[in-house]
Image (cartoon, rainbow, N blue to C red; front, side, top):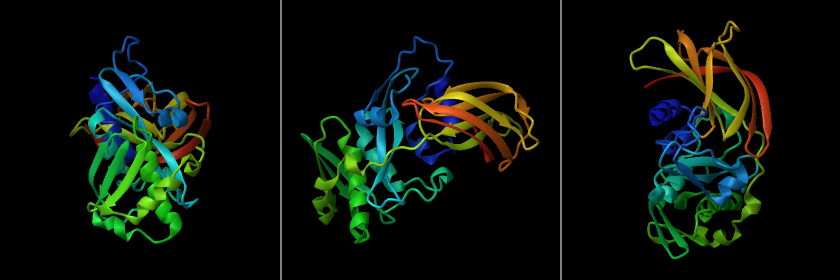
Length: 295
């Protein structure tokens, strides 16, 4: 049941969460004897703090470093989770290439230096060396030194966080790449400090074919402790219901007391006060366009 709640919670919100959260869940109403666990990388703990437990199974928390648009050559860390240990590196790199899409909360802050069509052909590891083979499109990366270093920083730092990885080799179509010469320059100095946590958006969930919304989910960009969260309609009237935390404490889920007649794009007034796991706090009030998803 908890996994079903997660699946319906994440659909359509913050595209970077959709791919990797499948199967992972954390709720405030989870019993204390939850048997699952999360193995987080040192990078995850450094930037986002301890990870809440899962209901069952073993989940993996890690970081993907996205290139910054405001400070060329620098990167910003974002949290990800997956149950598939065997494919963590490939999943991370694939999402790095896909980018953050149209995520409004970070518009203007993230760059996409990877040429359109770039793909991961292979990720292999021998001892402490991870070799990444990219498709030929990577050869078209802009010649600007900062852009090229941003690409290398993002790839190298994302991979080096995993246990046992000491060296990263970048190839294109099986051949050596000039980008590989920049790997030695990739270090923690390229990582920008994180600002306060942010609200990403709100999504209304309803049963397939149903007319009414049963719950509204408010998503944040990292695990947080929710101090205050209230949702109101366009008329300013508070939407009544119970609020839980879910998706590794990255979402506040309002279970509406009565079904809601809401349309996609309807303005939802959100009030929040949150603190992330390392003590960075944020609060705000905003009108957010509602997304509607079925489950």
